[in-house]
Length: 589
Image (cartoon, rainbow, N blue to C red; front, side, top):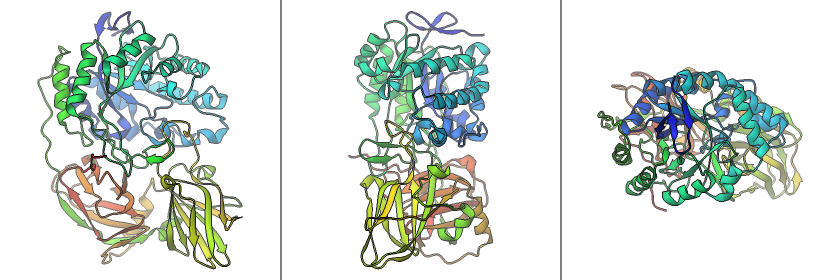
């Protein structure tokens, strides 16, 4: 079997110098029936390795679950990498960042008594140990010397930007070795002296993460990694987008030039991202450096392979560069992309969200204002309810909203409190009396920095004119499984919809002439979530920049495709449209 090691100057494969030409491809962001296509296109571009994170929270939505089926079948993904004749780099974290919800850490971690995360806390480390033991049967037998594709394992992720707990890193190394991993271990940090020093240990091979000024960054990395091969294991060729901002792009020419400099100086590389994919469902993360900024549904990342798997001009430019630094050139190329079908679908059924509450969740009752984490609900929507009897003018004040709260009195919409605007107060009608309901959306947990692991929902206390409100119920809305809604629609009559008034679910069906990817145009819709054939495509929002949702062809049938939309506000028309190409928004600042 092949042996992969790190030598004094190079990576060594069976004792011979070997340059890693890798591309990042997250299995959990791509439909599993499209994995083989994306991997093949990486080889066709000139890469020899695929890198992926492992999203702990996706595999373990609860403490007693570990799912490795369907789109989480990491073993199958790695086998497809091997079948294409490529190697693999696996980054199991436990923290991954990746603009992914909570940086990949499960929401339940702090519920079991851990004082801190990403540190040498005994309860946290016990959970990490269990996670890696659950992962072991998948990754240990797929190491290169066992006949599999895995050549490197990364310990933690950009830890030098977060902490400096050497005992934590040492224990992570120990756990990874004890489960049977024997391939070389690496770390990655941005090329700053403090980060490179704090984020690694002697014996772990340091690599860098950057997207420009390649020569300067390699020189910094070399000071901290005086022997062995240099590697940029996150070569940023694009960037991610926030709702309400612009769509980030990098120029083809500059990215190709920076890649050329890396390779001309003998470095190995992992292109981040080769193919970004999609934050399906409620998986997007968020950033908060003073202002909360949730990540959009698309993770296109301006990558060489776009969100729907089509080569971009950056793909062809990188292919030209890579061909100058490898003898394993591929004569075959991906086929040209075709425009997606364009058509409209009438929406013929509507159900108010209020009518579905009993099918989506059951309330819990509290004398205080709980967080959603308090009831074990870690994603999506929740409904708070209490009774009011205020005299005269009234102001509702909440200590903190995470992340977006629509306020209703007797089912009349009074307005929205948004975390990104730091909203905390809203005026109620004079002599407010009746049922106060607050629909809260978790828009994505922070994936980077000190706010990792924070609770969601309404935080602290709620007050009317300074007096604390008590006697709350909290209903978690289980929108991960939309089958109760589709069952209700099956029993409902069609009606003549001319517009949509939210919060409401709306429904339609459509046929296809032939299998194809689709792009759902969200222009004209305000804010909400879309499911097709029971699969959650993700969120849309009129503030952009993203104005289409990608629909992978494996989700679709030739007949009777079912679309369900949860519109939180309103839409002026009762039809939806599919368009020929994606629209990820404006690129101007």
